[in-house]
Image 1: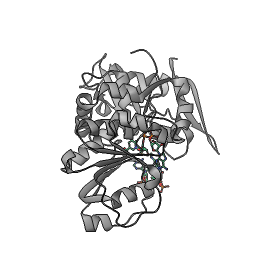
Image 2 (image 1 turned 180 degrees about the vertical axis):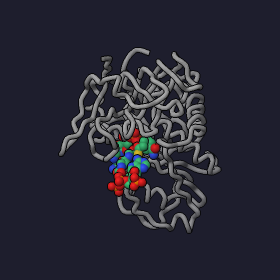
Image 3 (image 1 turned 30 degrees about the horizontal axis):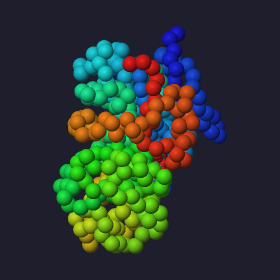
Image 4 (image 1 turned 60 degrees about the vertical axis):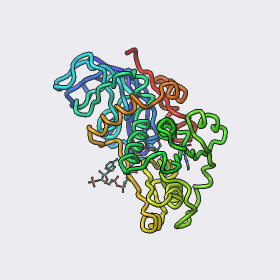
Amino acid sequence: MSTFRAIVIEKNDTSQIVGLKDFSEADLMDGDVTFRVTHSTVNYKDGLALTGKAPVVRRFPMIPGIDGAGVVEASGHPDFRVGDQVILNGWGTGETHLGSYAEKSRVKGDWLVPLPAGLTPAEAMAIGTAGYTAMLSVLALEKHGLQPSDGPVIVTGAAGGVGSVAIALLAKAGWHVIASTGRAEEADYLRSLGAAEIIDRNELSGPMRPLGKERWIAGIDAVGSHTLANVLSMTRYGGAVTACGLAQGMDLPASVAPFILRGVSLLGIDSVMCPKPRRLEAWARLATDLDREKLGEITATIHLEDVITAGQDIIAGKVRGRLVVEIQKS
Ligand SMILES: CCC(=O)SCCNC(=O)CCNC(=O)[C@H](O)C(C)(C)COP(=O)(O)OP(=O)(O)OC[C@H]1O[C@@H](n2cnc3c(N)ncnc32)[C@H](O)[C@@H]1OP(=O)(O)O
Ligand SMILES: NC(=O)c1ccc[n+]([C@@H]2O[C@H](COP(=O)([O-])OP(=O)(O)OC[C@H]3O[C@@H](n4cnc5c(N)ncnc54)[C@H](O)[C@@H]3O)[C@@H](O)[C@H]2O)c1
């Protein structure tokens, strides 16, 4: 019987067990496209799944990995043919459907996006869900009508994956970017991405005042909890803040004051079930707007053997920028 290498999470009565093993092709789940996964990446959510820190995995055994890129091997879907290069983000892969830390994946063709022209599979995974979520966040601010001439934008969790890509995109578009980080040693890195100001995350991590001094017109928040509450309380009249993350916590100990006294908007961002037209828009913008040199600077490459440790590192806040997992040759 044919097998392929995969990271597999299994569960016993008390805990989960994660390992690299041979997985039977016969155990792949239903789908009309099978592709050779050449690259994946490690997002915060992958760290949650690999460590079991949050109940991300909803089926066992599970192959984690919410992002994959590769080459179609078999297709019953009208949009995809053998040899096409594709990318996959979310749709429950690594949660309810077998994910991409594997040499092979079978999914619904409707979930796949053609690799955008000008991007390599490795670059697409350097972007990954984190970068595509950063782009969804920028699009949400734009759709709200905000532009660089309106004032500064704050990015929290700045040295992480969402934060790093968001800074690069916003700076290129002409925004004055304020980066909030707990890693003072990454100041040069953040400036190289385009941050104009850097603030210590401690300024935002404690209990908030209902309204604070107005400091920015827009925000991209990957942190949640007190940090998001503080970002909202310091947002200028008519501004907007996107919320995509929970690195500090899933709670939101906030006040309604910014909403009812300053007309501030809180814009929720979901990458997992995001409809396909918006995904295509985000990927097209990433292919044109994201500086490849900066993308290279924020990216490190690892292999399938390193993924379990990388999952622990990202939850510990030790990963800077983005990690690409090189699984096999394109
Ligand atoms: C890339 C995207 C990201 O990085 S997001 C960050 C990673 N995600 C997480 O940390 C979420 C992990 N999940 C949790 O902590 C819990 O499921 C939370 C959301 C707190 C809810 O827990 P609890 O109150 O115990 O209820 P539950 O797990 O039974 O779920 C309640 C209903 O919600 C649903 N639900 C669960 N997870 C998801 C999800 N990821 N997307 C959409 N829906 C979800 C469950 O199916 C359940 O609904 P139903 O009752 O079955 O209709
Ligand atoms: N909504 C979505 O669809 C979606 C998509 C992608 C990511 N996310 C979420 O966005 C967040 C960032 O994801 P990522 O892949 O960029 O992760 P990451 O680990 O690369 O980045 C997280 C950043 O937050 C920082 N951080 C950790 N704890 C903190 C705290 N207590 N206070 C302030 N900062 C803290 C880390 O140092 C790191 O810089 C995660 O919570 C992830 O689940 C959500």
